[in-house]
Figure 1 (cartoon, one colour):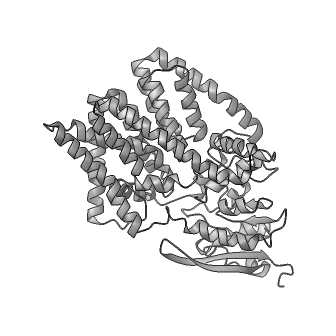
Figure 2 (cartoon, helix red, strand yellow):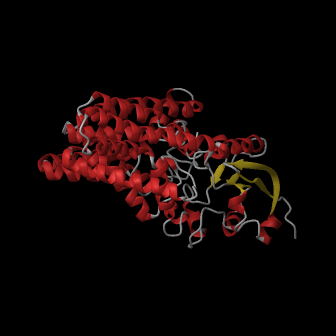
Figure 3 (tube, rainbow, N blue to C red):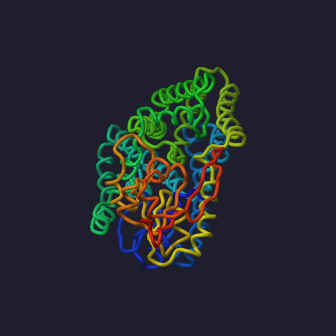
Length: 464
């Protein structure tokens, strides 16, 4: 499981145990971007044991991805009128190495992708007035960036069937409204606080998002690749294929424009916003869109024979499997690595013997730690679940780090972090050195990078 998944798991466990929709009981902050997925996990936990939440998330991912494979087959057969092409697209989706790595990570990505596919099929293909808006609302409640997928769908509907589009929009608003009203009264806003926190915490130099997006297009996996001429050429080639595929879709399959256009639109918005595109689950929902763009290119390119079209399609789709399989195997990357999560599990074994109910633990990675220490209050310097921490973050381009001012002002009982988080501001602070002691440390290696993992505890008798 990814560390971020355990943030949602802790919310779900607190709901199931009657502690409210909170990460830290008594502090209603919407620090998860997936309220629907959280509610589903909480419901399952309430029926049984909250310890089963991670397993439930895994089962949901398997079920959702299986249905998605079926939907991709149906949609592809409708688009290309060829069973071979439909089977090839569905099978490629099923075995994509990048997708498989994320699917086992406990995130909502699998469910979210399925809901977007069903929303497209029910709204655009079937024109189902009730089910279409319902699934669109469910996708929005699963992740708010569903808006990027829904905008082209409703734009298409307005152009083709304005009366249906107006009714569907009204129903969509009606389905989402109860959550918006309740979330405003409970949290103060229906907008996840994590969106604000990431906007403040993740300030990067211009082009940082594109640094991940372009290699992803060329390799179908994610890492901090060295931009070689071969990689650059591969990225440009894939960009051209997707762009031409979108063009062919507009000419030959206008009904599928919302689906095929979603991926390029999403990547464009993320690049312009300079979003933290090292989170691999950001790419997951657009994979079907990109696969259909590639299929449109291969299928409608002026190729004389059916066998040749099938061959070109198979060749392009095979590259989306073989290339990332090789890279993931021989060049592991930290965004997909679970070594960080394993390291924090070791920390938990130590902290469970130390942390008492009500102790405050400050950590920039709050997933595994928050899940294994249910009675501790977690202070998040990134601000996902601790909004007050945002005031201490630097305003210049800087990855997440722990400001010394935040630690000295909040005085947590423990500080747990990798070396990369503490060296910029925390360990150089003389006051921090006076008030905290190193209680535990371990060298860890994450995707080839070695650094320390530290636990600091507040000194009972600070040095004068």
